[in-house]
Length: 111
Length: 123
Image (cartoon, rainbow over all chains, first blue to last red; front, side):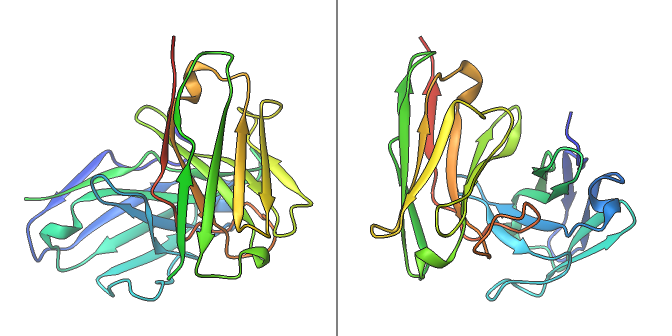
């Protein structure tokens, strides 16, 4: 259904490390377009977490990191905290659709 | 502090119209492109429309082309989304979001986002 595929959910214990994948194709991530990541905490608007594959905006914790390889990208979160619970979305550009596109989102649960 | 505040959401009937507005503060509004992105439980996040910094160029998703019109008033730090011929599937929370560039390139990120305006299309 979504051009960018994310796992529906991931979970981890406090202090652990989790990764969220974002799989695309040759018309988006594989074509070299940058990937950006957003965090959406319950009841709030999305917030930019990572831009340009691996860059953190000012004020974002260094526990969050991003990478891109081939047709996929990943968001890693280290030292999980309860406040990290929420939804995470990847975003890039698709040259076939000529649009900015988002992944379906991944719900992070800190157990 | 950069802030975006949407208004104008509400209930509309299929075929009806609504106009969303977003007032910006904390940055030089006239230097940046602005976007509208919507979110539904079923379809997730969807980019809807963008307008260049000067307002001279506008961009639309195929799903709203011909029905929605984006505009901006740089003297009032405001970007608007006129939504006509509304359909059930336009029901969503609509966010305005700042572009890092003066032009819309599609591959840029959105930062920050407003708090959102709920649009419900229903009889």
